[in-house]
Image (tube, rainbow, N blue to C red; front, side, top):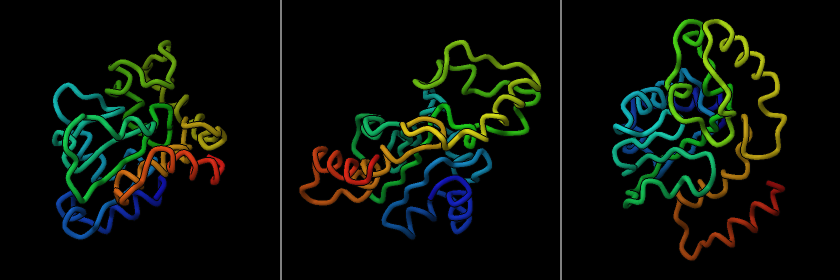
Length: 180
């Protein structure tokens, strides 16, 4: 589910434990900054991990990714059921929040995500206005950037479901067929 879909579908669960107890896995793409489970996981991420690509619980059940190779971090056993959040550092849908008006977010205090200019800075009110304006163009890109995730979605589903005999080559083939 993407953005408002991820927000609405998260509402079916009381928290991560409930997701793990009642599903075989979940993929949420482009969560909003108000997604309650996402917000809880990001707020309680492992020490030293970034807000843009957090690690939660050592990556045991939950992974955050922007690109398919991010699903392999951390390099640790990944228990089922598996939950994946696809989020891009440049996605204004994920990072837009009224708190941008007067508080610098962690994602601008940390090293920038791969697709965010190192020149990006937080300025009271101005950064809020910039991210708000970026919402208009968030889905116009056709790479793993902004609010576009199609290139990583197949890899995420393959990682969540772990189909027998599935390979990276098959992921690449399916991405090609889907035009991702």
